[in-house]
Structure formats: structure tokens, C-alpha cells
Length: 234
Image (cartoon, rainbow, N blue to C red):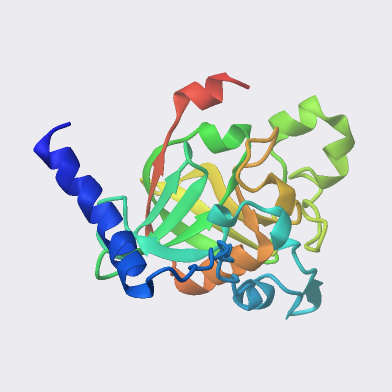
């Protein structure tokens, strides 16, 4: 046994020896190990954030946020993008959307992605945004899904509403003054957040897209980070 081992053993046992000397034959009761309960998580902020909300003539239903991975909740985080304040960044690989702020912070939202969500990447701007937009599926989609003919561009699209695939808000991305056909939009399908699904661009929970809509202006720069590997998996 080395001197270091003896020293460490003496330190660990020294207090016990001292207690035996002081108590002089008294029995020391063995303490039961008490399990430390984790601190309760205050979910009241999320209940307010994702609760039912009146929005114009519609009432957004409450979102059962407890069924969604907490990392996809709206939250302020350190800015990992390297972009200056006031830029939107869509990280398609991680299913996150960031709005950058001062002091190295960013508001992060969870998003869901469809096939169209991987068809465009690069820098652009939010050319305009719409509250309760109409949905007009492109002619190519209508050709594949004839049941969408009533909502075609020629027929004026689908009326706004809770079942509209664009949800409560839509932000339209242009590049060099041309429509990329890439959208950030709301969706009633909250269960697709954090996942890749068959259709749509960048979808957000309706309560989150309303929040984002209120934070950005027309002309806001946006960077979409593509992920060819994920796109190829469709």
C-alpha cells in the first residue's frame, strides 16, 4: 500500500475513529439515505403559451404541449447561427427556426418539414406575410392529387380557417425579387413538429407562427440551411 493510499484511507476513516473516541462506546444510529426529489418544473408558462387563443374570427385550439419534445418549445437560447441580429435561420437538419437577437441570443422555435421544405436553400427575404392566408396548391400538386382541384389557383384556393394547411399565418420567401415558393406557415398538425412529413414547407405550431409573425417585418433577411441527405430519404 502506497503512502498516498494510506493517507486517503486515513482521511476517510479519521472522522469515524474520532466519533468512536468521543462517544466512548455509544452506538451511532445508521442514517437512512433520503432520495432527493427533482425540482418541480413550472409548466404554467407553457400552458399560457400554447393554450387556446382567440385570433380574429377564429379560436386557436389549445396544443397538448406535454406530448411534444420540450426542446421544440418556443424559447430564448444562445445564438448558434453566427448571424447578426434580426435574421431568420431555418436549420432543416435539426428542425429548428431561429430569430436572432442582440447579446448573442436567439428565439428558437421547433418546426416540421415536408418535401418542399428541402427543395430550396440559401439566402432570401420575407417579402410579405399574411394573416389567415388562402392556400393555393401549385398546379403540379393538383395534377398529382386531383381531389385538390377545388382549391387550385384557377379556383382561387382554399378559404382561410382552422383546417387550412397554411394555418394562422404564412411568411413568403423571395430571392432576387422572385418567389421561391418556399413558405413558413402555421399548421393545425402539432404532432408533426420536429418531424419530416410528406408535404408542406416549414410548418410551425399555430401559436408559434403567430408569435413569429408579430416579431418580424417585411424585408427580414432569412437563411435556409439545406440538408440534402434528409431530402434524399423521401
